[in-house]
Structures are given as C-alpha cells and as structure tokens.
Length: 229
Image (cartoon, rainbow, N blue to C red):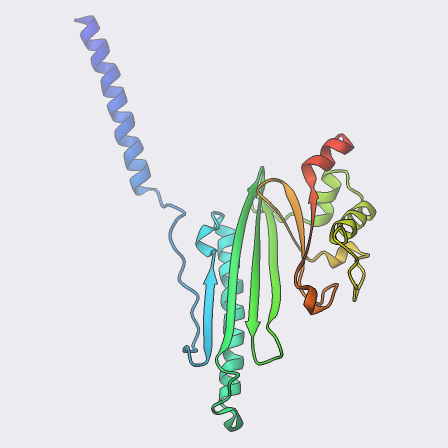
C-alpha cells in the first residue's frame, strides 16, 4: 500500500507539473506577434515599396525601433512622390514610380543584440541612394557604444582606425574622398553572430559611389585573445 501511495504521489506531481506548464505556455503573452506591415499613402503608381527582415528580429525593443525607422523613411519617400506627381510638368514622367526598400538583419552574440538595416531609395536622380541604420544593445536593452566596445577588448582608437583602414585596402588602393581617420566616422557598425565587429560605410562616406558600400571587419575574439583580455 505504501508503494502504491508513493507512486500515486509521484505520478500526480508529474501530471500537475505538465498541466501547469501547458497552461503557462498557453496563457503567457508570447513575443512572436507580427508587427503591422509597413504601408504608405502611396499606391504602386507612385511608390514601389519593399521591406523585409523585421519579423526575424527577436529582440522586441530593436524590432520596434527598426519598424519605426522603416515606416518613417517610407513615409518621407511617399511624400516626395506625391509632391512630384502633383506638379503638372511631371505628368507621364518616367521617373515615377519612386522606389523604396528596407531590409533588416539581426545578430546575437553573447550578451549583445545588433541590427543593421539597409535603405535604398530611387527618387528620380541619376542613381539610387543607399544608407544604413545600425544599433547594438545588451540583453537588458542598454545601448552599447563603439568606444566602450573597443575599450572592453583593449583596442585603442588608433589601433581601430589602423585595422579598419588595412581591411578596407587589403584588395587594393581606394581613391578615398575622405580618408578614415576618426572613430566618429564609424557611424554604422554591428556585431555579427560570430563576434565580428563589422563597420559599414555607405557610398560617398569614404569613396566614390562607384565603389558602393564599403565594409571593414575586426575579429573581437581574436583581438581579445591577443591583448590578453
């Protein structure tokens, strides 16, 4: 009888654990709800709109920020298209529709979460324009600055500038419009899933448009090992 009672207690406890676990999963709000899609007041005759990657951002804070950035940028391009279309001289112009695309990528590494968003706009110029938005936070959503990141890996600003310049020119000389000489020029950076610091320079930031987007990488793990940190 004692053995039977012991088994009954064990099985009851297991059953209750399973039931409560199920109820917890069923009734706990999940952070997987899709956000409203990016939309504008422009139809396809005025603006061709393409966005992606927002749903893959697991961090709720970064996902919300990225969606807001995309929406704001799309609204501005739509407003420009509407203003252009309202000009009688633009009727039948081959410059319409304008084009706007925004694609996000999400990276996690240890206690950091990073996003990089590429924006592309065609608004009637000789070529489209590319820009980026990046942000890195901790798991508590505290902002991570580039200065603090380099300091935590014992990388001086001078060494960072040297490493970025060497990586940019490893395949050959670049006719820099503006040489990379200050950490303040590294406005767009993120940490990849493998712990690699990637610095992104859109066209014209350092070099002519024909060179496109320039990227430089710094392996933070290797640098930490080399510096004994």
